[in-house]
Length: 330
Image (cartoon, rainbow, N blue to C red):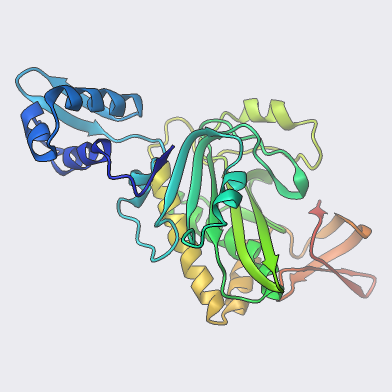
């Protein structure tokens, strides 16, 4: 595990190399200001290379960073992050059972507000309605801990805020326009490219914390994932945001998402939920369509006409409207 509040020699060397990207730094140039031995510098360089950094090493010249890593290391996300709250504390794992489970453990600490837990791979990733979420390398799997300043009745709108934030981020960073399938899936060509899960803890009638789980098929092997999940419930195809030749660094997408999420969250706190719902609806693949919903109350069929102020889907069938807060839409 690495964290954003590590101030290790490893992070200091990365920072130093980045600040001298156009030139070589000798072992002495690195060891003296950081008060390290040359052997320690060499050891850290090897570790950085194993983490995906491309570092050119030449006798009598030293070391030069030629390419940064694509791993979602905390210091890579923190470098240039413009948020005030989200992502100020980050925990990174190469492999974890579930970022959501670890975030729930962390949430008992009051200082963990806006904290991000992120992993390259999950072995027991969770989706909505207790489903398994396949989380191979190449995706972005993360959870965000939030101690909200709104009432319990407003928490059902948070998946709408989160899915809109992700859609806007993908539009800005990758110039791709995904659609949002109620309640919180993002699709490309009607195939799932991302999903959102919200866990909440309520104490004495107030929200103690919300944990937002986000799974993004950033640069995954689509056929591999399809093979693993094609026989599961609610399967409707798999998409990926980027192919192997795409040069976008995933840390850039994470930074932009955290900033957009914070912006929409603040708009919501300021009473702008109508604006958020309007923007979500513009990107919806559900509203205006004839749908079938599987819910705890049984199947519901009709035309999806809007989402309510609390995020419920409103379905009109033969002049009668029904509201659905939880369910699967097809």
